[in-house]
Image 1 (tube, helix red, strand yellow):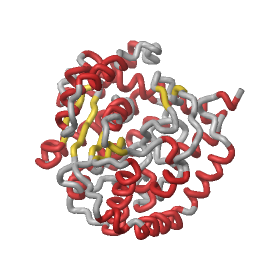
Image 2 (cartoon, one colour):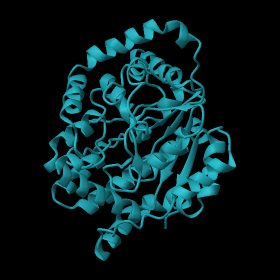
Image 3 (spheres, one colour):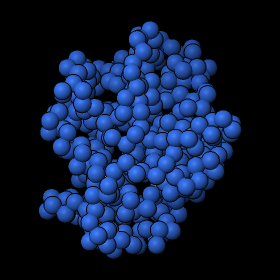
Image 4 (cartoon, rainbow, N blue to C red):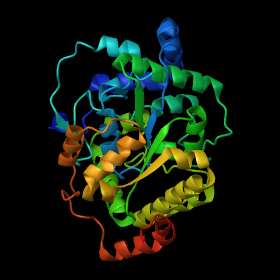
Length: 365
């Protein structure tokens, strides 16, 4: 049945999400009103060393986000916050006595189980409200250290404080793949922020991206509401609404779009992988603040040495390293053996050829 599909979006949620999306200015105004009513509490709630997981989709970012959000005292957005992201305090109060929901596998079909309380990447909705072209591939989506956007910055800082207040937490964590193009800007906003940057060997990474793009595209044809919800919540990584991130290289983005339009899916993904990782290499090399704040986490290390990897992540993020927590993380991790690679030998060779230069900079020879 359609209702049993992980891509099914209930009618009420679909229309509520559409209303919030269309009326973003109104909900920003509500968010400011909420902040005004909580002014005293927010003034006593500092934003200390926020945690950001930011890398290309399918690099292990969800697992890392869930790990950080699983530490006591760390607040984040939750599945149930959609679409009422702009007023987190009021929404959390309104849903505090909800009924428990069953655990289910998320739409990606990747063994990650979720409930309404699971960490979710939703803060991009706020960025889209203030930067309406931040997902337009025709223009640079990069935000650098020299950028200044006072209205957004005031709203965003208050928003984080409200989440901290709602969860009685002292640290904020977010997963946002699009922060790859905003790392220097984030460090200007929060000089003590800690960045976790997941990377993955290109052949396995692109195989996963190709699989997810096929899976979501097929499902969204059958469930159009799923496409709408993905776009409204700020997810354009794959599926029918796919849009490449433009980290400041419009010519390469146009080439990637041209290759995809010609039906060369794998070549397009390979060039996209190269562009994003070239950009990351450049930012890490040119901005000492980003270099100091960032920990690069290899997907392969997560799979092969999970205990050591999660310990290094926790230490980098200035979070406690507790043995039971590390053991629980280790028990969750394994190689992705739940699907067969969609790539042919010729496509594997093509990926290695297209990504050789960028991959070499990351030690993927």
